[in-house]
Image 1 (cartoon, one colour):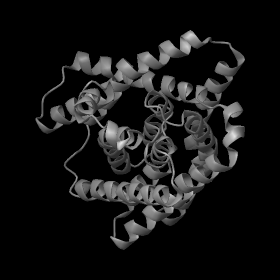
Image 2 (cartoon, rainbow, N blue to C red):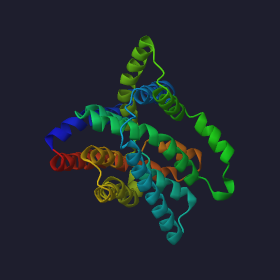
Image 3 (cartoon, rainbow, N blue to C red):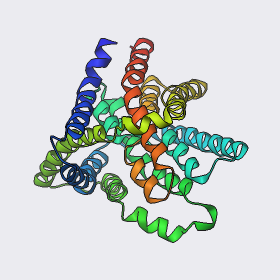
Length: 305
């Protein structure tokens, strides 16, 4: 457990520092808005591009790992819609439930990946995180859009203009086509990438809103337990049934143990979803994941030491 806490500590400390700096007013809202834009449009796309362009995509079992990821996501989405149908849940909340259960905090995921000693697990996790970004964005937008207001053309162009998705596409293209990256540009990407994780985790801390959380305490707690404990358990059972090797199990378990993305709040508000419930759930998951990730990583170390 102590070793796992040591792995998670830098991420937890940066999130906590971001929360303190935001709540104390040490850095004003203009700074954080600028920091988020800088990371969203420049630093983080550079990190995703360089990670995918240099990733090992020739792993024989990568396709089966991705198939398992998307199968589990599909089961989650179907379960949410069945629950929503039985309980007459409004569309504004359906989108919140789906984002809470399938979206992931890429900053935290990549931070954990860089802390791992095993290069194979690190490579699998980086591939999963980057390749899943376009899929979860599409599902999130669709889940927040009423059937009679779906505009496929508008959704397509909004995805193409998304810098994170574009950087993933270009990164995969450079990797598959074996396009060399000039060393000077590679060094620049490395500098951007190093800054991105630190700034991203600080910004995650600003998304923790305890004032909103108290109004949705029970609902956000239940959603968070499902996300942080039930879904990882489901993933573990399915991987045992399909006899995945240790590296794949650990990578997929970490992926499904990461809390939802703080950017889900912005998308939910933009598409008229229940953004207050989304904010409460993001806050709850971020706080609880400190303990759930330490527990799950410790169990993985125990079973696959």
